[in-house]
Image 1 (spheres, rainbow, N blue to C red):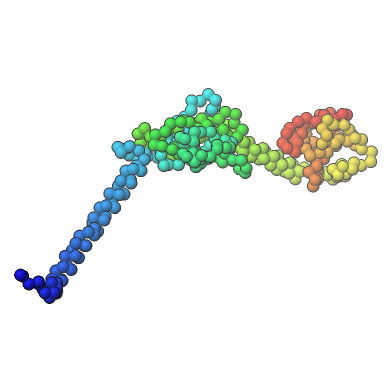
Image 2 (image 1 turned 90 degrees about the vertical axis):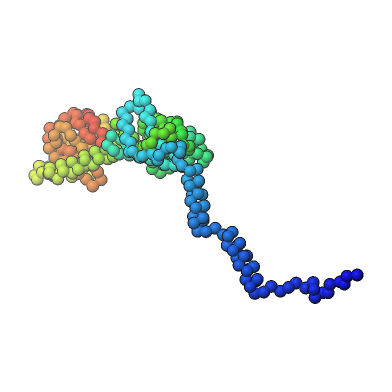
Length: 312
């Protein structure tokens, strides 16, 4: 029979230091081979960025980026005009400003559009907010912003301006390989905006006030030795013997005194020529006519011009 091997013969042999170094080196080389080099990392990063850029490219692969061109649209009568077309670009917010003939801003009352096609001032393209007037409180805007929801879009936008009966309609498109975009867009109308009209009224009132002040400074309120009672009429307390006279304007009072006609009120006499006048601190004026007359023409405090009939 064969003899069983002893436990000594089954014990593993210890590796020599040289063998251990060989095994360790092989493990390190295998681990190092699994780590990407800096060049390989950069190559993968570039591939990812290029893929992302290709996915987000605003158009077809053969298209170039659109060139921006300012656009000015002149409108005389919106009711008889074929809508103008503006070109937009995906990812680009286009401001559209409305001005009157003097270049003054024209307030926007409301805007109508398809929110599935365009985003107006951030509303649209999935941001489902109910369309509302451009401004509910405070000052109305005079500029809106428009952006297409997709690369290729076509539709229209209707803008109602304050005080204008007909809305401004613009056709809008994007894509289709145009290679350009309208940026910014300015719409100029031949009329006057409500703000311009209101400012013109204020300017006219100020002009007439300055003219009245100049007239008061150049014409003596009380000619020396001629009419010492002029101030009495100005205060509304006429001197004794003054005869009241009826007028067809409630704000104007009239008297006959010493053969002369006196008119008092917050008005400016423009015809006929007066012989003396005075102004009070309460906005009242007194006008004297040496020859009484039955009709004079005045300008009211608000700027309205009208005749005043005197019942002599």
